[in-house]
Amino acid sequence: MRVAALIPAYQAAARLGEVLLRLQGLAAPPDTLVVDDGSRDATGEVARQFGARVHAFAANRGKGHALLAGFRMLADYDAVVTLDADGQHPPECFPEFVNAGVAGGDLVLGARARDAAMPWSRRFANGFASGWTALLAGQRVTDSQCGYRLYGRALLARTPSTPGRYEVETEMIVRAARLGFRIAEVEIPTLYGGEQSQIRTLRDVPRIVGTLGRLTLEGLWPPAAMRRAAGMRPGVPAP
Image: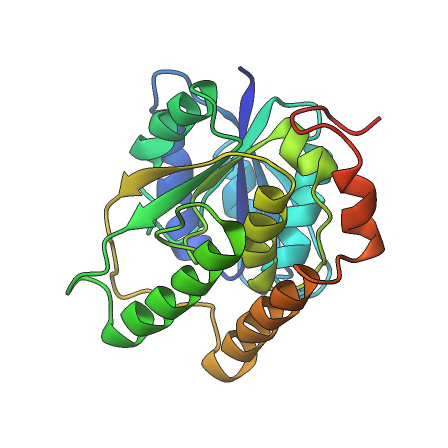
């Protein structure tokens, strides 16, 4: 199974190098692509110094745009594992995602414990969004907001996605599940240091809630893109 690592990065120069170094220290280091989402610091330069392939946006476009650009560039891999650039996602867990994919998971989600290590506001928002997402997906979704994931090639080829910011990750879960893809989970540590989250409450939370509302309606009136995708057998890549 050929698996690449995809790291969307914005203003991540201070921590990105350690993440890349730890990925390189794995028994089977993955090919790594960093999508620099219009950073004004040295994010791109740090990525190149540590041997990563870099694709850079001229201006900040949002995590969803960075992910979709990366998926297109890595379309020839069997799967892509996404992880954050700030060190919250331990690179040492990478092989567990690969193993879960080999075992049959089309979409493997990182699952953090909603304990005292997670700020209370995130615990509440995460629990609310994850419960709604699981209801729509019809499969277990413990942590819908964790960006540490494995996406299988067939899932990426078939699942329609809407470019945006963080809400694209929620959309991918629900739409993939509705297309018959299997969701699996890997428990990962809940790590929060002094880094500042790139999620903006007044901008991103309403977008995620709005996306969940739209996906609820899609269950009754699927858009044309989903109707086309549903006409193909699960597990078979688009032509």
